[in-house]
Image (cartoon, rainbow, N blue to C red; front, side, top):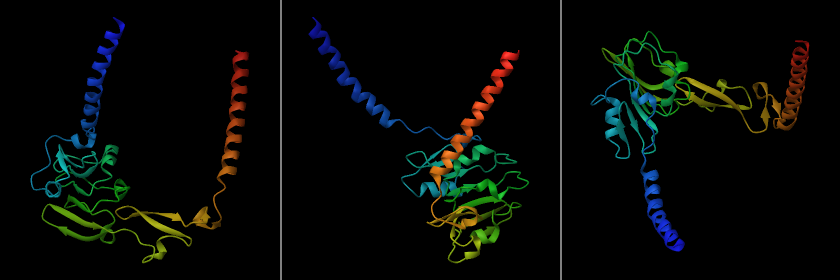
Length: 228
């Protein structure tokens, strides 16, 4: 009797496992929260809509244009009654096209777009300046109600060496934003120290200090408990 039951169990598992694998493979990635930030779909014939429909590998979902893997390449938040952009906005840092027009923004800090290194088209309300200004974009076009910033300019240490100190190079960090990284063989303040960073020694000192402070605090708390 046991061999019959075992064969039936193995037969059921042989049918169930392929089904479970198929379901796990076919499951769509979770939709980012920013795509549902305000109701309605992407506006018809908006910059995001046109960009997405011109590429068969992309798909529209709520307010986003997504890759098959669920990465945001377009975000349409126009006419969402937004006065500011909250931290959830960072979910769209991979966006290539971004539409924020028809919102009552008083101003948008350029730091909001930190890490938006892929951004190439940004539509803003007419009274809001393109982050980084003329130096951060190849072209800025304005109409009665909106301005569109085209072609984010990446920082270039060869063209503008003054951006970073000697022994360092700049890396774009969003429109009008950049960070300086030390070239190989240099580290420290303004990349003035030559040689690799002493990571082992630094870790040892940090670990020893942390251990000593922990012991001190433990002893202090223990005395307080005994005293009470």
